[in-house]
Image (cartoon, rainbow, N blue to C red; front, side):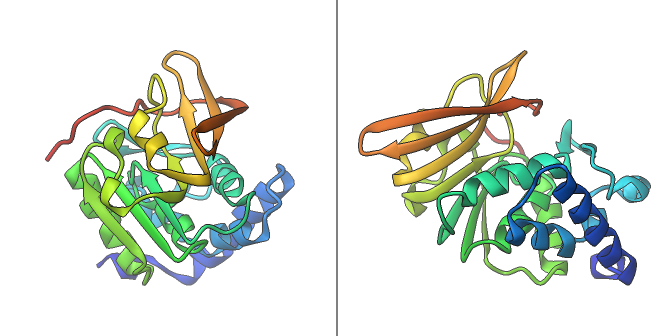
Length: 217
């Protein structure tokens, strides 16, 4: 069973990973605590569990990856920079690891995933962690989750060639969108809404899988 994979060793490994990320510039204590408490090894294939607490991205199947812990922490920290949002829209559930961090930082996470098999696996991991404040939708991330918006915060864990208009429309006034944008060259951006104006800030170069439109079974 999934829950049997969570052991005492993971707590120590998570704490060491959090300390490493702190040494690399992550300073938000809530984010670091969430990293320390999350058993990253349950979100990766068992054959890669020995690498789970390395600061590196890993394949999770279906042509997708679990993001590098540093970038998970960095995007989470950027999301909280304007204060703790009550709800977060996540585009790209993937392994569910980023989802698990967000679930520890807000009241409610709404997460959209286009690949049904990945969504199912992520749901098992979150259940094993006893996290029950996540609502999941199988669908097209480009379209967001209109019926649940507007959102104070939106995080996108795959890179579109351009910012999806639907996500901008679902961002609450004063809310912030954290998103990697680009194809061959990708830049992590913070987009803040001020009425009908969207202010953009570039953070750093990143590398994500593409945000593909549509959904898959």
